[in-house]
Length: 214
Ligand code: ATP
Image (cartoon, rainbow, N blue to C red; front, top):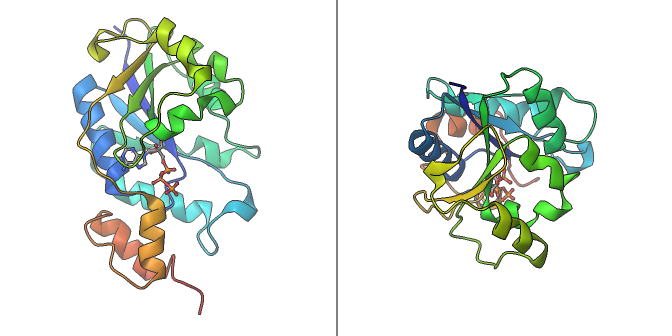
C-alpha cells in the first residue's frame, strides 16, 4: 500500500499553535506517515520587514523538531519563482510512488480563495484536499467552488480512496489564532507566550523579530 502524506503550506509568519495543533490532529486522524509543512516564498517586498524567509523557515523547523510525523519541506523557498502549489505538487509527485496518497490541508479561508490559485482546476489531479475549519472565518463557499464541491466532496473524510481527486472537511480543535494577531501583539510589546511553541518564542526574542520600529 502507498504512503499517506499530508501537505500544509503557509507563510508561517510566524508559525503558531493554530497551525501546529490542526496539523497534528489531522495527521493523527488520517494516520499520515508524514505531514510536511511547506513555508511559501513571498516576493521580497511582501516579507514582514526584518523577518526573512530563512527566519520563517527556521521557526517552523524549531516548532516541529522531534514532533513526528510533522516535518518541514523547504522546496518552495529554494525556487526562484512564485510558490505555486500546483508546481509543488508536480515536483512532489516526481519523487513519490504512483499509489502514494497526497492530502493537501488548507484552512477554510484559503480554500475559499482556491479559484484564484494558478492552474487551480488541476490541483485535484495530484492530491486530495482536506479543508480545516477556522473559527475566525465565517463565509459561505464562493459560487465558483459550488460545482466542484458537489462533484468531489466526500461525506466521510476517512473514505477518501486513491492517490488524489476528492475534497473533505475535517474537524479539529477550534483555535482562533492568526499570525496577524501575533505580529500585532509583538508590535505592541505584548506577550505571545502559549500562542507559539516556546522554541519559537525564544527565537523571536533572540532575533528581535516583529517589534515595532522605533
Ligand atoms: P496571517 O494572519 O499572516 O494571514 P495565518 O495565521 O492565516 O497568517 P498562514 O501562514 O497564512 O497563517 O496560514 C497557513 C494555513 O494555515 C492556511 O491554510 C490557513 O487557513 C491555516 N490556518 C492558519 N491559522 C489557522 C487556525 N488558527 N486554525 C486553522 N487553520 C489555520
